[in-house]
Amino acid sequence: MGSKDGLLDLVLDEIIGEHQVPDPEPARWQEQIKEVARHQRRVSLRHPYVVRISIGRIPMGPKALQYSERVLAILRAAGLPPRLAVQGYLLLCSSRSSKAWSAGPRRCATGASLTRRPPRPAQCAAAAPG
Image (tube, rainbow, N blue to C red; front, side, top):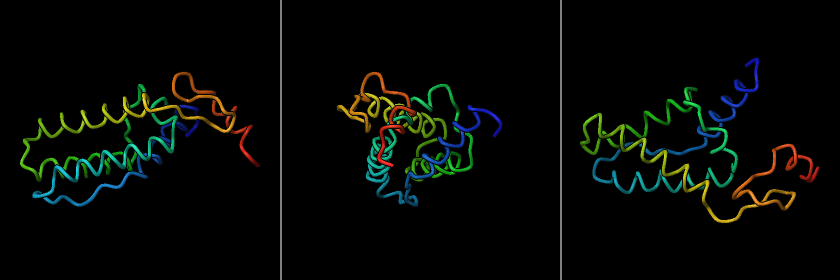
């Protein structure tokens, strides 16, 4: 790891690893993408800093790559050409980020809102029950 950026890359990969992506079923591809999006939202709400951590980073960890491949497999099984599948995947990712960032008020253990200007992680950690 060796640096703060390296640590944040590992954290992001672990969070992405929490996402559940089903095996492709061409007849159910639309429902499967909806399931992926709903699960992404749940993970993003559990980890309110994931959007801030991900800004400016290209997730290249093993869990992130596996996640990308599995979502792309669903889109490809639906018959989308590779370029359109990638565009759909990127749209899904950008939608997830914007919805997580603009979701309703969330608060950390300090009671501070995480909607607009989240407190620093150290503030939440210091207020968390020990």
